[in-house]
Image (cartoon, rainbow, N blue to C red; front, side):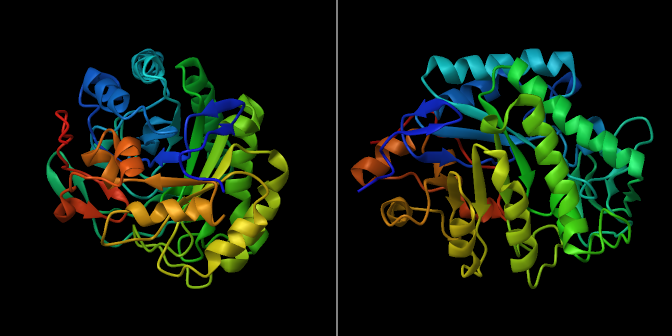
Length: 356
C-alpha cells in the first residue's frame, strides 16, 4: 500500500514524500521591486521537509499584481532574490515550485504603477473589496484584454517560467483557481466574450490551454503543474455546472505530460473522482475541509488511491516540521482560524520555535 510518506518522482526529481505545502499568499515582499526577502528564504527553508513546496502566488508581470507586497518574477532583481530562497530550500533537501499567479480583475489601480488598471477577459466588475496600503477598496471594472494583450499575457507567463528556472526553482505551478485570471477565462459570468477566447466550451478553455502549452514549451512539461478549483466561489466566481468545462480542459492538456494537476476541492466533491480518473499524470489533492484545517484524515487519500499527493495549507504555517508530526500522529500547533479565508492565509504566527 502506498502511503503519504513514500517517495515519488516528479519532473525527474525524486521527492522524499507525497506531502505538498500548498501555495499561500503572505504579502512579505515589502522591499523595492516586489522582490522576495531574507524572511521568505527562512520561512520556506523551515518547511523544506515537505515533499514539494509550492510558493505563494508570484505575479508574472507588473499588471498581474493584485495584492500589496506580493513578489514578482519579471525582473532581473526578482530572479536574483528568488535564488536566495531556492538555494535555502535546496540546502535543506527540499523541492520548490513557483506558483505563477496573474490576478486579472482582482486588484486595484493603487497597487499598480504608471496608470495601469486590472485586466480581465471581459469588463465585469467583481463584487467585494481588496486590501491596499490605504485600506480596503472596492474592486474596479477591469479593462477587457484585446487579442494582442492576451497574446502578450501568455508570453508573460512563459517568460516568468523561464525566469523561475533561472532562479533555481524545480518547476512552476500555474494558478488557474480562486477567481484569478485563468479562472476568469474559464468561468461563464466573467468571460462574456464571443470571439475565439469565449462563448463556447472550447473558447473558454482556450486561454488556459495556451498558457499551459506555452509554459510547457518554454521549460518542459515535466516542470509544469496546474492548479484548478471547479465551482469555487472565491473572488466572486460563479460556476454552477463546472463538469463539462473542466473535463474538456483536462482532455486538452492530457497529452502535454505535465508534472501534475493540483485540485483545490470545493464542497461539491462528486467531481473529484471524475477528474482523478480523467487525468493521466500525478494528481495532487487539496481536500475540502473548511472550516477546519486539513488534518490526519487526509493521509488516507493517498492510501485509497484518491490522490498521488496531498496538499496542506494552514497546518504547514503553524507546523514547519509537519511531515514529522503527521508521521507521529501529532501534536500540532493550531493555526489561527480567525484569519483563514477562501484558500488564502494571512496573519498566522510561524512558530519558529517548535513545540513538542
